[in-house]
Length: 179
Image 1 (tube, one colour):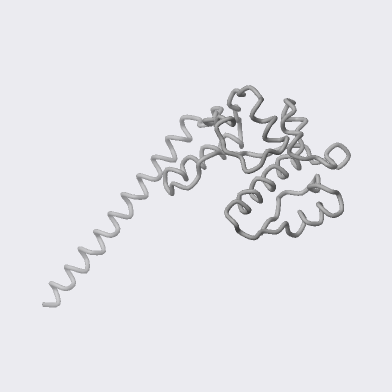
Image 2 (image 1 turned 45 degrees about the vertical axis):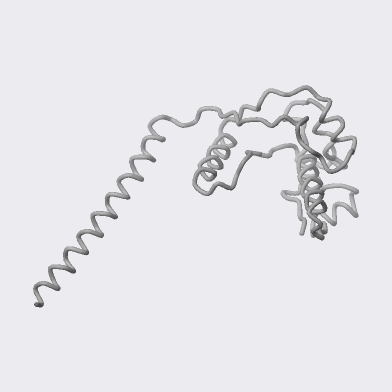
């Protein structure tokens, strides 16, 4: 009787170890394939036609956005491309992410003080876009969506400080705070 229990437990342990090794080998071969292929190629996400979007207000920003010609999708390189690819992999796994928005831009106070989302509609290079302009756009969009859903919301922390002190987003801040 003891030998049957021992044999069953030994078989169970061997089965678990074999399954673990098989899973680990599969994961390693997938990672190795992406490393060997040099997965550093540029990435271009799909784009949205901004004229088809229903906006919650008729602000000048939205009127200007609707009247602009469609832009070519951006081409992301290096770290930004990796961010897009990772979000796509997460989308496949969790079905939650739909768009990629890697953000970079200037953070110097002299040039970006008072920056807002209207600055994004000027077709400049990415070297002249202020990080604060992108954060302002995101802050306003999220705030408007919350208002549309009849959820109470408030601008908080550094974003509130920037709104009071600088009448906008603090140029060198990393995030926008809304709750």
